[in-house]
Length: 180
Image (cartoon, rainbow, N blue to C red; front, side, top):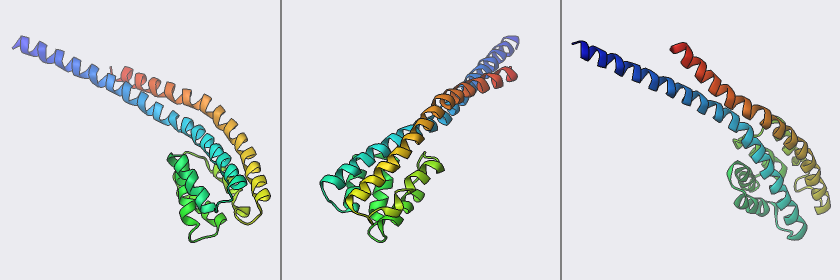
């Protein structure tokens, strides 16, 4: 009876430590996921800048229609940003280009902030309504604003990504210590 009781107690201790380790691992994982949002925002802003570079080249040298250009950008750039361009291309079949762009920005789930979205919406009023040079100037202007947003996003990523990772580990360890 005493040996079974000791073995049962030993098993409970092993289970307890396994659970404590799982708590630390799980909270660390949550911290990593929260920090990843900032990394993804930076990635998506860079993808938008690349998409605008493609857009600028296409309208200057190919004279293709906007829905077709946006469709080609969507195939070149995958993920959330590609989805925005794909949705805008689809929307342009029923709406004018500016409205289609805004609707795509609002409907597509991304890691961009509302401030980033507002900068991108700056392209809407003149999209498809001005000549090629006017359109090129508008894209360049929005790209300049995106540079500012990218700098802010990179700074927030440096601060917050590390913060959330460390916070996740710290909270997990704190919970484990309390449970001991």
